[in-house]
Amino acid sequence: MTPAGDFRTSYREDMTIFPTRNSRYALWAGIALLCLAPLFLGRYELGLLITIGFSAIAALGLNILVGFTGQISIGHAAFFGFGAFASAWLHEYAHIPVALCIPLAGLMTALVGLVFGAPAARLKGLYLAIATLAAQFILEDFFARAPWFTGGVAGRITEPFELFGWVADREESYFYVVLAWVVIMFVAAANLMRTRDGRALVAVRDHYLSAEMMGINLAYYRTLSFGIASFYAGIGGALYAHYLLFVSVEAFNILFSIQFLGMVIIGGLGSIMGSLMGAAFMTLLPEVVQAGADLLAGSAIDRALRLGASISFLREMAIGAAIILFLIFEPDGLARRWRLIRAYWKLYPYSH
Image (cartoon, rainbow, N blue to C red; front, side, top):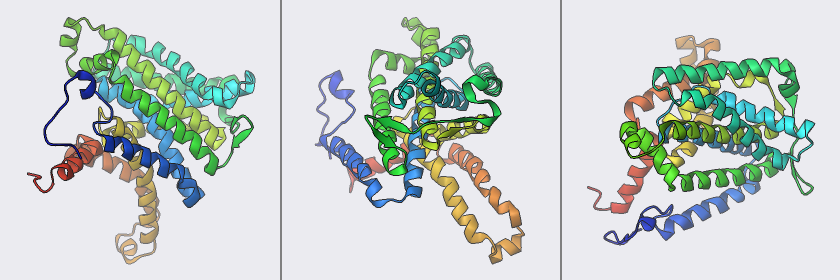
């Protein structure tokens, strides 16, 4: 709860991450509850939380590019895959500990993102979308033709996370690794948006002509946004690789890139917390639909509509339907709905 009136008297107070002490306490309480999750949840539920974690990191990077800077990328899954292969390659050939391979894979992916972002920074609209689509296909072809880096069509086996003799080879232990990286990356993104560079990214999105007249280098910040988005994708991909302990070339296709875009759209463009919400929604939606499909199988509805084997495709259909419905009825995503709920209880019982 906040007191009546607004007593912020400086820019520093206005830009704080936590507007009230209760919001800070709520975050710490949420992290503490998550730390206790392995004591109460099974491996299946922890696996879902781990998937949400590394997907949210990659989605946050895409949100910085799309939601905060106003760019577009249809090749985010390729950078996610590059981070996964880079981490595995660094550990196998350079004999670098996995704990260091994850950030190094993010830096390698950021360099690749800068290479593709430099020419794309001078494009916009449909031309930019086609350029990022080309990056997706170029990296996919590279994955297939570079067995020294990816293992080729056979894929590459990775090693579990290890730090000072502690091996995170099960969901109960690897969950803490992903949770630590989620906290680090989300706090870093929140602080980035409070800096001069973060405000410049938003200015490029809101009105690039006005931003250029104010002295903001459009090409520099557009390229920078590609590098940051690729860094986040690389971190998420590295966490993905050391969780599954196997990386396959076929996993990082264009459909995976569309799923990342769906996470950003459903969660909310230009919202840091929305990236986490969108990743959770897109991860849990197929599981809920699959549970519903299992209930429908063999039922009277199944026999009346003659669904048969097509029930198994409901998972894929649900993702597309969710994106369309959110674009129509909630274009600002789950983050806006959460802000409305908070505002309602903040003003209750005078919610009008």
